[in-house]
Amino acid sequence: MTEDLVKKSKNLLFKTLNCCESQIIPIQKLYELSDIKMVRSAVTGLAGGINNNGSTCGVIFGGALNIATMQVVNNKDWTVDQEVDLINKINNYVNSFEDKFGSSLCRDRTGLNFRSFRGKIGLMNPKTAKGCVRQTEWAMEYVLNTVKTDINTSEIISINHCHTPIFDKFKEKYPYIDFEYLEKLSSGLSGGIGLSGGGCAALSAAIMILGFRYRKEVSNNRKSNFLRITDSLFTKKTNKMIDSFIEEFGSLECSKLTSNSFDSIKEFNNFRYNNNCDLINQFLIEYLSDMSF
Image (cartoon, rainbow, N blue to C red; front, side, top):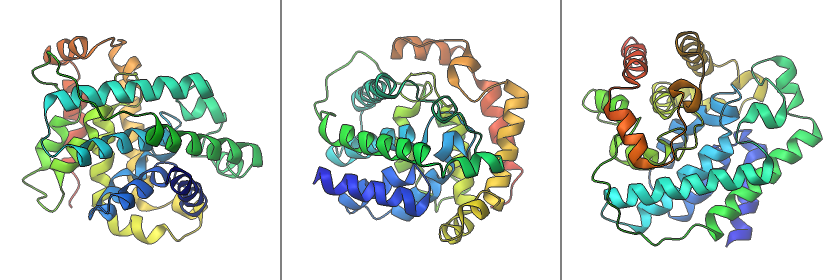
């Protein structure tokens, strides 16, 4: 089974040119989940280091969301202990990826700016392409062969997730989005992907919502040329939000945004409960609120 899923993931990477989707789709199909289109719309903007901006690699996002998917499928009751376990699993996953490939940031490994024409062409370089394929293969094998399903009891009562204020704001307004499922999948992204200090989880949640805003366009453009996809309305709107985010806060990575490196969930909770990141949440909510869905 592992070999077959790895092959499917690698083939999808060439078909979609989306390192996050190529990880997500095989696992969603494996468990015959009915919301594949929903998840694809949500994650399409996480590729290339958050919509081609060189931050946390889309393979990292895809693997983390796959670990979460397996956790959701194998546990009917969703508890805080499962969220704690999920964060720890994803933290181990990110650390293992960095040990293997040197960095979890797309810009560090490729040296390319995928928002530029030169960067887009550079992705076609055989050396770069082989690197992406190798990382895709490793991630799928890690998720399927390394991640354990045992859940241990923790002393954590609740987790103040980064994505919660973003999703909560739009639940009633957009009932056709399965926010409950997205919240479960996103539980391991807090603190910059499993407390690893990578791409901001609140920003990731906002990008997921934008994926729904432009879901028809995102779906139609999957069959288009890669260079045309990067100029889509979805990409322009998402990058406009990202550019404004960087201008306002200076970075896309949690470690730089918070000036913290979280060693535990308790430490992360203490930071979040002191109203830290409120300005980030307010900025993203206001940006999304200004868009008609």
